[in-house]
Image 1: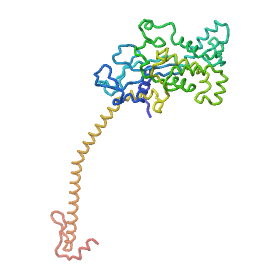
Image 2 (image 1 turned 180 degrees about the vertical axis):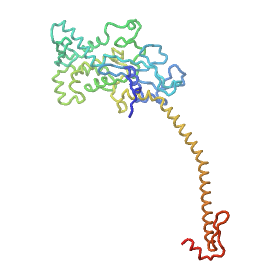
Image 3 (image 1 turned 180 degrees about the horizontal axis):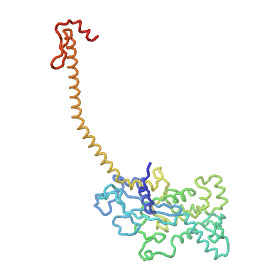
Image 4 (image 1 turned 135 degrees about the vertical axis):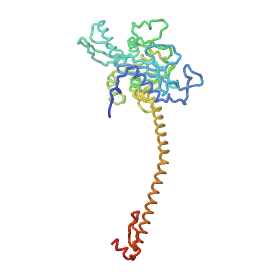
Amino acid sequence: MQVLKEHIRVIEGKWEGIYSWIAVNYALGKFNKTAAPAIDFPGTSPGQARRKTVGMIDMGGASAQIAFELRENDDFTSINVENINLGCREDDASFKYKLFVTTFLGYGVNEGIRKYEHALTAKLKDQNGTVIHDDCMPLNLHKTVQLESGGNFVRRGTGNWGSCLVEVKKLLNPDSKSEVCKAEAAKCFFGAVPAPTIPLSDVEMYGFSEYWYSTHDVLGLGGQYDAENVAKKSQQYCGQRWSTIQTAFKKQLYPRADEERLKTQCFKSAWITSVLHDGFSVDKTHNKFQSVSTIAGQEVQWALGAMIYHMRFFPLRDSSRNLVVQEAHSTSENLWAPLFFLSAVFCLFILVCTKEHSVLCFNDKRRASFGLTRSQYSYKMLKENRNSSSFLENFA
């Protein structure tokens, strides 16, 4: 297989989010024109309709991504707004979408832990010690953290998940904000990212990766999101002694988790919860958020969305090619008819000539009993003064 260099490129984080959004909505059948429920095309006549799309949040280890559709008449402008067309015609609005999509670099769960541990070093100076009481770890769990200066300190878990949530929120909304976000009427996501006015509580949202692992693997709450239940189960888990959790783990009471997951569960559940409610302003009571790992039994990857986007013109091209093939086939059939007729006439002519020659030869042989002479046309003629017995002698 030959791979051309022009077919290989590095994509931006924004396009990874777009491809993921396409893949999710494709897997859910949101691009089916005839399916319901439908909404009016934004900015077009009321007679046209299409299905509502869903938004997605992907919480990874190093970054987080979000993508959702905006109304066409939404006047929000930003570098994070992208217009895409999934149809095979540029003049058809059926599959044109206006998306808000962005990547929050440094705000994945693992980077969140790094930010959190960096913030803990400030407490070392205040306490003049090497042990930090940590609300974001199970009770009595110890972890040694290496400092950039070469030293280290110890995190000792207190298991207070509610207080952990407060500390995590400080990491999402630092005091320093952009000039746009400082405006009184401005709406911003965490990380000082300007946001559209559409409330995400009203948007059907799907959470992937850590939104699934951090709610499902230990808490068993994957699926439709319930903020109150997540907070309750998180507090119960983190309030346990680490030795108790280890005993339960050995008894396989956490079959979907490994030991590293058990150690970081308190922080990760607090992180994803704070990002959802404090970072994206999703209401804790009224929302349409759910965490998933698969859709219709299949994992959904951004590569599927990339394929759909870049092959959107192919059905039309295939139709054109099929039309050309059909026309060529029809033309070839029209040409074969007279050719077949001419071939049949030629074969019939050869057959008749062969038959006449055979009859002539037979008659010549019969006349050979009277002798053979050559006529002016170079045919052998019979001599009348020879008897019939001499005929066989000529072919002996």
